[in-house]
Length: 268
Image 1 (tube, rainbow, N blue to C red):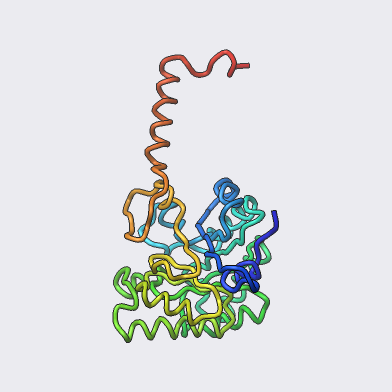
Image 2 (cartoon, one colour):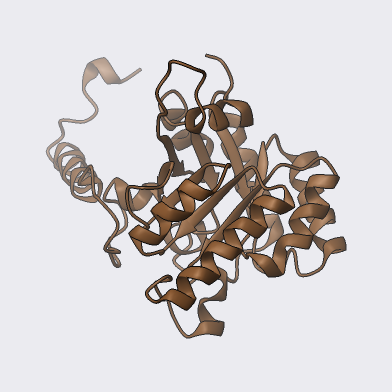
């Protein structure tokens, strides 16, 4: 299968004459196994710092660090041969331009990631520009910023009033002008996200921002019903994964205790 690249994703929003625009599908993954399952179907795999919560059981994403993110990015790249793979730059890894370039280059040198993602709008535009200048593809992230959750006092929806809506629009435009190839819109009021998507040339990927974005992303453990600590409003569960796994485990335990596993055919 042909490898998905930036041109593929851009063309989904701006198709060749006579073709219809198609939405971009995106999901998170943290290891080679799940990446290989998602790879034939999904356009865009994000090695998200969300792994700190859904994979490591932490209360937020802030304690994820470069070595952790590199480890999981390398694993995902082993399993994903077709999908576009994006590495999340963790909190504290891009405070300065010099630091951001150094860490983004680590992703490129030590893994096969296609791009990096970082949070922030106007205040991070100069960093995006510097990364792009060094040949690094950048995905922006504006609106609700999980890495800023402690600083702003929680997870707050963006765009509820005119001032907030104008701010997130300006952030998205700044990210685009700085050279980002796509931008994630998280926790943005749907009507505002739709307006931003129409005004931007680059594709937008929504999470909790309505159907007007150019694509959608979900954390895979939410979408597959594997994470049950809490369920955000924007999550649609497509599989009761935890229940199905537990039922399988019960059958496995019963077979062991009943002497039905292993059978002679399953023994050497």
